Length: 154
Image (cartoon, rainbow, N blue to C red):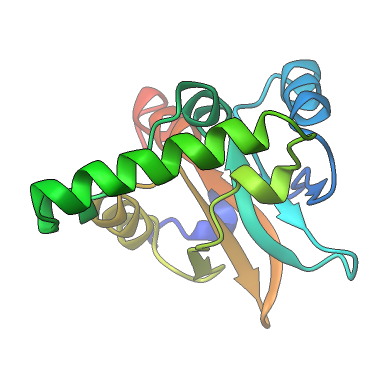
């Protein structure tokens, strides 16, 4: 019988409020020895995911998209100017997790075969994916979980 998402997921997902400051979020990640966390709104619904990479990207003013390749040189200059302006303005106020999170969420059903989970993670370049049961998030699978399978010879 193939391994399923529910067999390898981490069932206790540590989430953070979207209103936490970036500094508080960074401390939370360090204290828990994790590199990312789901972000929840005031109704405790997951609205995104935030990671150490998001913090670094904010500090480095990095935007990793393919949109620049689709722009003219003039549009690229304007986009860089706008990003710099936004960065400078945001540095004047507390940055909240909602400002740096990725609002796009990926998930699989708990009964999804681990091979299919791995394929989706590779296809989407994901380091973590949520696991749902009856529409509710019940866990998370990370790259570490996949590496653990290989190390244990599964």
